[in-house]
Length: 203
Image (cartoon, rainbow, N blue to C red; front, side, top):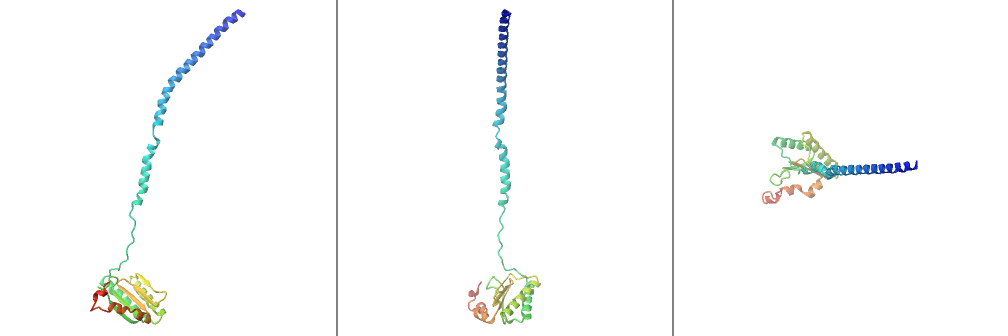
């Protein structure tokens, strides 16, 4: 029994060693075959630049967002004296005259300033007996102008009401207290030297 066992064991050991060597050689062969196949498969995926696909999209977004910024900015328009026709001018003049008569304005004077200034064509200077009267006259002028669809460009001096200016474009109305009117002398300012020195009154 001992002799047969000693004989069989070397054979089993030899078979086991041979099997291990065969398995190792197969693993090596399999590993050597898989490595070359894996490397080419991974290398192209890593070589592809991920940013290259996103670059055009980012550029398109930048272009679309930048487009509104190039739009021309709006520029404020300068306020100029409206160019009224003869019929409209006549209606405006009639509305002013009626308002002054209805409110019993005093010492009304009209000064034609065409050719002397580009601001207006006619200056109307009139007086009220008190600050309340002055304000009432100016308010009536504004109301009458609005009724015919020609609201004033601006109104100044309503708070103190010693001198209220109503700018109607082609016609500018000055409603003043007598003492204020005498102090500033608008009539003298726009009429003195009309014949002797017309260049002094150029606007």
